[in-house]
Image (cartoon, rainbow, N blue to C red; front, side):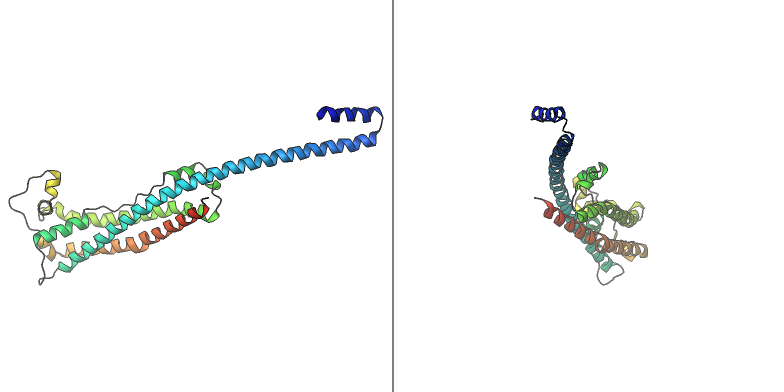
Length: 254
């Protein structure tokens, strides 16, 4: 084909027909431009296909990550609720001379309420990789990109509140770092001593006197307030954000 056009060009030049040659030259340029445009279009189509495939890979990976994070958050919410209810039961006995728990029941309440540390550890490895590599732009849904970006900062805010909850929990536990109260009694009566291989003591020191302690009551109250705030102001909104992100991801997966 190229040889054919060259022969035509040479014939036009040999006939000294400049006007016809000019028309031919323009046509040849147009054909070259069209060829370039077609090549660019094909290249763009290939690039778009690669980006779309990459996006679908990311979306499927993000869906798996956020589904796991949802399970973790659901379990953590239940633990936080259990701790809240346990602390309220303890408050019911504080200063109540008409109703006093047994040493065993009191030990179980203390152990079940304060033995679990609260910390949400979401699966964000792929999300961090996407953000750090600049691939977030490959997510075509603008709302999803915004929510994924906001998710990281939201997790940081939640972590700060969890630290505050941890401080209030430690203040309660500090009561058992003195000579006045016995952590060993709690271990003996809840069976923890068997789990960690400790021999049971012959005579337990009672911790029931804590129910008459204003310091103990104040620490429990602060723990209750912080636990409730953790659920209402942080975990519930976080679950709503998580559900919203999962919904957007599902809508984008083909």
